[in-house]
Amino acid sequence: MEAVQQQIVALLPRLRAFALALARDGTAADDLVQGCCERALRGLASYQPDSRLDSWLFRILHNLWIDSHRRRRPQVPLDEPGLEAALAGEDGRVTLEARSTMAATRRAIASLPEEQRAVLALVCIEELSYREAAEVLDIPIGTVMSRLSRARRSLAEQVSVDSVGQGRAGAAR
Amino acid sequence: MTQTEVRDEMLMAFVDGELEPATAAELAGRIAADPALAARAEDFRRTRRLAHDAFAGLLVAAPPERLTAPLQGASVLPLRRPWRIALPRWGLALAASLLLAAALGGFLLGRGGRLEPAAGLLAGDPALLEALQSSPSGATIALPDGSQLRLLASYPVADGVCRAFALVSAEQGLRGLACRQAGTWQLALVVADPAATGGGYAPASDGAVESLAAYLDGLGAAPAMSADAEQRALRQGWAD
Image (tube, rainbow over all chains, first blue to last red; front, side, top):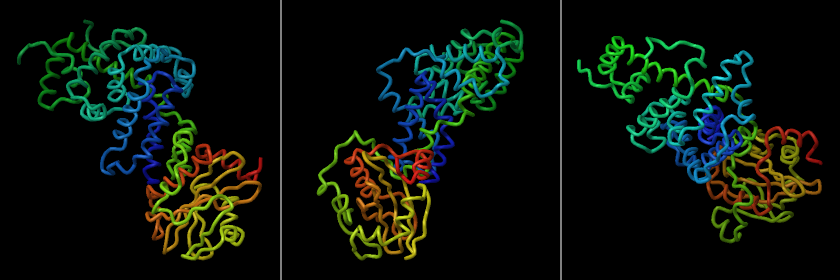
């Protein structure tokens, strides 16, 4: 059991990133992670040691989010100051330009419907496969793909190539 | 090769490495020959990178203590928050798993199957007393009689602190709670923990955990102290 607890500690950064994509607020995200850990500790008996711990925790966290936060539909923008500090403040080498791109990206992600935020976070941030994301969210893999492609199309439109400061490979459309 | 429109989902799956090799190879050929298709594919590549980079700070940041502390030694007992449940009726709640329960200043317990006054146990067992007073949660202490004591967590209560511990000998496993009030450690509660018998520290059986949790809830105990807070309290000898 202690070994699992240590594994959960190692997964905390990923849980926080997923929670932040869902909750869009740093404090609410950490509340969500805390609740997820409490639920996980209580439910360790139901965890199958040969299954993936990260997927299991993501599922708990997502269910918790659905249960406790969905109805409120918080309007908190994703670029509140504490969040900016949490996300961008660690690396002093990050350029101002890159920061503004990251901020623009976070705003764009925050504006997405929550179903799209969840798949975007699981696949692009947490690097789960489509199938794994489908299992975490308990939706068909085709739904994962349609939500994910819509999310990324919106993101591509909202965060312009110019602001990234790099050219697009291949010829212009 | 057909020149049907390539759907977004397909192009995205290609970029994400989710297509079958044969399908991917065919699509790669079309993309190489079609700048517009290549541009659409690049959008999917770019958005994946953007999303990842926007959250990369969190992926490398150290989580706050309030998230790590409950996972690091402080809560082998996954306690409920104290306000969530009321103190159950003892007779019902403690039932069969309870070897012996005693209110503060109360009853009896001995190791190795003997019963002796709780006050005697603590007063007459300097090793246990010393461990409660000065060892951090997570520490394991070998007691002179061959049993092992492990401190599990510390819980602030109204006018002091309670510490949960596990006591394991070859014959039996116990979970207990000792509380320090008015400068004195007293045994509050001890329950048999079948899961811990045999020298190992298996997770507590549900009955043992529920009993201790219910007792702490009844005292209005706060959630387990963080490692840092406990360290400060230990340095100050649990005094204010």
